[in-house]
Length: 222
Image (cartoon, rainbow, N blue to C red; front, side, top):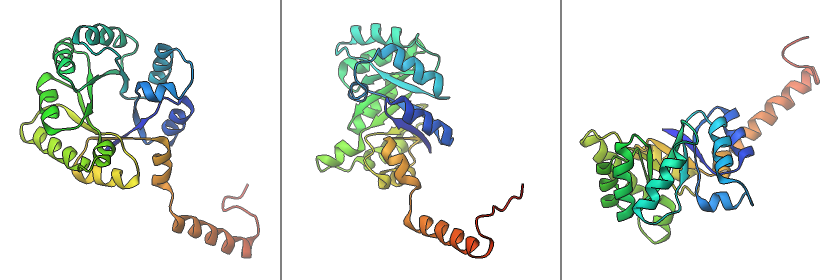
């Protein structure tokens, strides 16, 4: 399973890329708004220059014609940009048109298996079930991820599943078990994934034992 960062914060993205574990980014209007008054196009271009893999940028139009026009413009911003289209009737129509033009689409705000099936049929490159938001209303978000993954594998369809709306590290574990191709995680969750108190205790114990014998010298002599 690959990891994307779900953010529009450039510094967080740079850090994730330096760690060597982030291969893509997903943004949306809400995430961009957290960065203050920015030029959306320039921000996406900058992110695309930092990240080696797909960078999702969302349309704002709600009608198919507007989505298509926006998507065509967004697709010109960078080679690795992916256009986020909502899982609505208008969005499915737009996805169908765009996929025929070889414009990569991330079908976003997906909450049901039926939406995902239509997205795959329309040619979406990525399908993004929103796990956390489904959990919020008492549904099993990760079950939708598992069902969509099984469906795509059974029919050998090329769309990939991005487990989205990730709220905590357990979601990452469950997404991997469900077979998600990608988990897009907030920066905070990425940092939490590596933290464990026993690791911190172990590092401190090793250093204390070393210093008790060798002082502050390092393993590698100069």
